[in-house]
Every structure is written in C-alpha cells, then in structure tokens.
Amino acid sequence: MIQLTDRAARHIRELTSQGDSSRGLRLFVEKGGCAGSSYGMAVTLPEPTDQKLEQNGARLFVAAESAPLLDACTLDYEEELTHTGFKIVNPKAKQTCGCGTSFEA
Image (tube, rainbow, N blue to C red; front, side, top):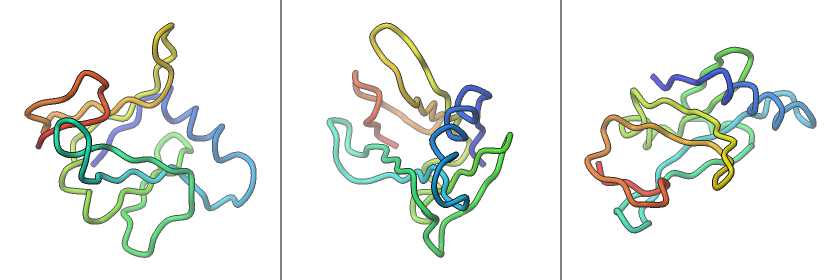
C-alpha cells in the first residue's frame, strides 16, 4: 500500500477541491525515462481496475498494472527553492535518475 505524507494529502485535497468530487490523484508507471520506467500522475476519475485509497481525506488511485511497482512507496509533496511538486520514495527502485522521476525496479 502507498503511504501519503500530510503535505501530499493536503495538496491532493487542494487539487481535487473543485469540480467532480469523485476525482483524485491517479498514479501510474510507464516505460521511458533515463532509468527505464517513469512515474505518471493525473488529477482524474479512477479507471475501473484502479486501486482506490483514501488517506487524510485525499483520494489516490493506483493503476492496477502499476500497483506492484508502487507498493510500499511514500508519496510526499515538496516545496523547495529548486523543486516544487510530488515526490515518490520507492524502496523497490534499484536505481533512479537525477531528475527523480525515472527509476529501474
């Protein structure tokens, strides 16, 4: 299961507060990036096969085919001088690239 930090949950709630109340943040893994696989995110409605999680009032959807690669991850939200956005901490990643959005499982 994916864990959300309080900062990530707060930002997801902000992103989904307008529009359809059943929207959430959808996470998925796709081929590409400099390390082989990259993370993808979208504020959207869930797909029928998505895993649906709700933590701290934030809705998170995980693509079924990506769930094994995202299991045990932590989703955080950073507001740094050089980087603002979601950050996935993945203990299953053997290698990551410098940008932090690409990994090898």
